[in-house]
Image (cartoon, rainbow, N blue to C red; front, side, top):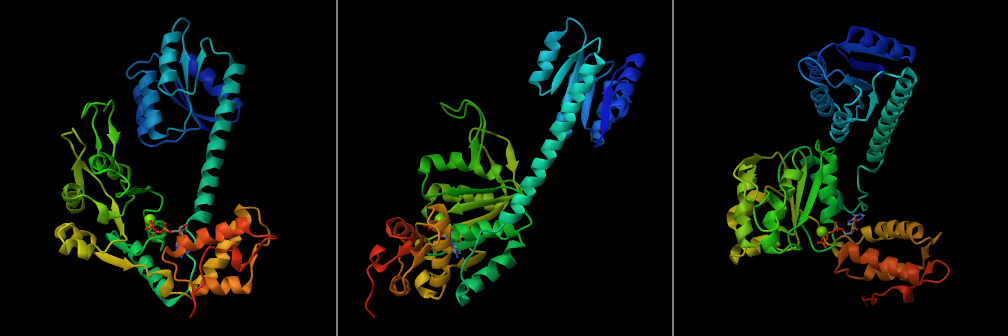
Length: 391
Ligand SMILES: Nc1ncnc2c1ncn2[C@@H]1O[C@H](COP(=O)(O)OP(=O)(O)OP(=O)(O)O)[C@@H](O)[C@H]1O
Ligand SMILES: [Mg+2]
């Protein structure tokens, strides 16, 4: 990118600026009115930087600045100010101008500013590339295990990830519901959009509506500014309603409406907000039971139970214990600086025999604790906090 936008109505000055930019290896588009510059920006022309006069016929430099910020927030805008109009320059800086330069223009100073703009652009671009690279590499959370039940779950989530269908993840505590929810998002076309998680059990009933839908300024005492809720933050992305079985009855009906219509109002607001969100729910409770006992709305249950996925407890897929153990050993060897962390055969055998009521989280915690306690980076049976079960 080496094109500069110059907005200047005085022809002689515009010509001088163009020559100065060209001497620095840039190409220039010259607009003689703010209106023309705004049209080019609105058409989507991209520039390494924008250099604009403040006082212009038609739309002024501030309007050009605004349009540029809107099109391409990373594009640096330099404003030119006449002698004695420093307040205008200050205003421009507040609106996000990159820098200002005073007339008469000092060519060397301008040249320096433009060089900085180019460096700023290149750095941003490199950062973006790095970020993409990072996302590519860490896109999928590691899902360890090759037992038939976990492979089946993996296939199911791969298929449903391609759709916008609501997914209900069911499983005991620590089985990996959140891990799978993230995997669905990462495998879906929404992967570059936000994944927004909310734990319905952790937030008191009176606050959850605010969390989900946000509020307008003045909606209640203390609402000093507008605040967006999770549904709005997740727009175009995925919202993860964790522990949905714990939702109070009152909030259930509000969620039902969003799931049906994909629209809602902020608390204290009248405008209806439309959102495009993919919904994933999780629960470690048997929601069908809760429906029978009257604690969970049946209509909401039908809404979320579109594509149920049950993650089996670890004791029903013991063959994964080996791989999960090796995975945790490698992880804690690194995190706790325990190079070559290993485990004796009888310790490993005890892990196979144990029932793991806390599932994978419990297994991880158990290995972490043993890694801290053990001598010479070798985990022995006595380092494990589980009671071996007699078969
Ligand atoms: N198959 C797996 N491979 C690797 N790590 C896993 C696997 N399943 C779960 N884990 C890890 O186990 C821990 C618990 O998983 P997660 O938080 O997803 O469980 P959960 O079902 O949401 O639990 P809870 O109901 O307690 O919230 C996490 O650290 C997660 O990364
Ligand atoms: Mg969880």
